[in-house]
Length: 226
Image 1 (tube, rainbow, N blue to C red):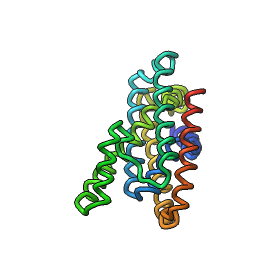
Image 2 (cartoon, rainbow, N blue to C red):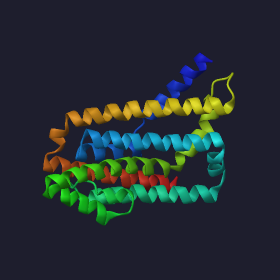
Image 3 (cartoon, one colour):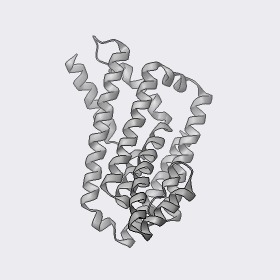
Image 4 (cartoon, rainbow, N blue to C red):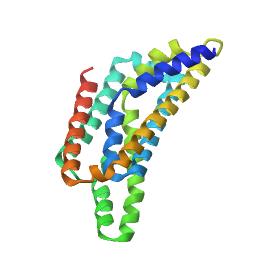
């Protein structure tokens, strides 16, 4: 069983290292708002994986993967969300992410950001809002990714260690995947934060925002057309 678990962990590690929408979202938050915001985004992504893992163990994710209609709805919603994040980056390069973008409350998020620039108290409330916005951004981007459902329902049963009940084996692999994702993206955030002074330069920041925006829209289009 241990050998099978190690082999499954290796497969999950390789899949975790492949760049995807999660990395683009984390890049945007970590570069513009700092290490704390980046780590909160990673936490939201991890919770999103746990949600999909729970649905997989309960059998609901298999229903999504098997139902073309339900899959299409989730797929279009996820693609639209990624494209929205990308468009915001293109339209406002160099600006801090609007917290409302994660939940649809753009006016509220903009107000918090504006207040943060004006006063010290506003900065505190802006940072608090930023934490929630970062967490929600990671969570929503991951929950609206139907490929996770297909990945979990299609691959995890084949990787589940023998000798364990299927539900227990898949739950164990979900936890392993969450841990690997958190470690990988957390390390990535740390590396970005070390170079934040470089990324904070207006020209570099605008260029990175445009590049991230194009990448997010590209992932959105890919999700919608796959």
